[in-house]
Image 1 (cartoon, rainbow, N blue to C red):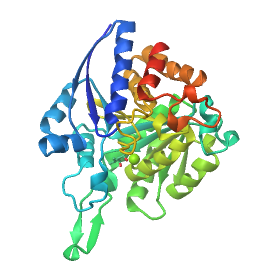
Image 2: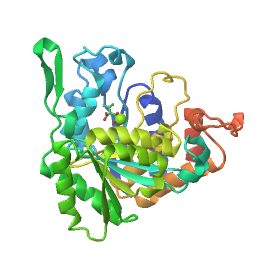
Image 3: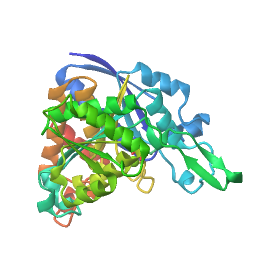
Image 4: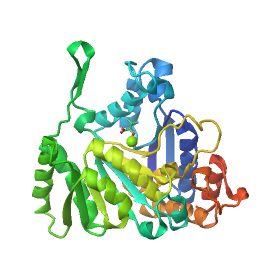
Length: 357
Ligand code: IPM
Ligand code: MG
């Protein structure tokens, strides 16, 4: 039995709906294993701007720092996408949270549940057995370098910056993970063009000497983008920079059938943050059709990584597996073979998972 304090940060759009289901899963686990979980909530993103004018109020940050883990929804609002001149943006809250909490490693497991082979747009014989763990660096690169305008606003720049220690700490995490898996690490960069990538490659090569049992390859990001679709099973652990990781993991989500299936863990110096990789999806917000499985699988990562509750975590994953085996689907992962009665909304999908826990 353990006492844990969890901060729920729903954010915007479907973030509200999917974290509500994630919390029910946490409650169920607490009940079953006799743990004591307490909760609080905090604002971020557009919701926080509306309430306070700030996409990450100090109060939210303090609550995050004081909790044992954060279950996160999504941030974003279409109104900003069409207004590039907006000075205050929901995403600033997310980036500030990553920086302030020192969340330098973003783990994005891309695992295809067998039952979803046909939900992907990639041929089943190419996909079968795909199981990739991405380590995306999360607090450096072009995301956090100096940015601005010169030439009376007619020229814009974003600096990509990496220091050795930043590459080393994420690299180490990726090597350690590879050791517990199939012992293969692919480091992705653009070392034929970028100086930050050459530094990246030097550091990964140095680290490789300490992990002789791990087979390392270096790939350029463009060819990795191609190989992910052509031959996804060749990858085990992939480690890459912030921007490349952002793009490649959205691409790789198609291996898992839908973005609605993918969970992520952001870890580093302090409190870990667990969230779906999908966004706020305002086109379906409030309709009750969002897929809650990514949030539920984020709970599984939270239990395992932040709380060391392996059994609890595996139970959540196997409950998701069973629900899929029974034929239940949300809209995004349904196909022509799915019976209409088996297409569930957000809450019903959550209930179906709870029944197997
Ligand atoms: C992600 C998202 C964010 C990112 C956005 C919302 C700022 O796409 O977490 O992958 O680019 O990191
Ligand atoms: Mg992204």
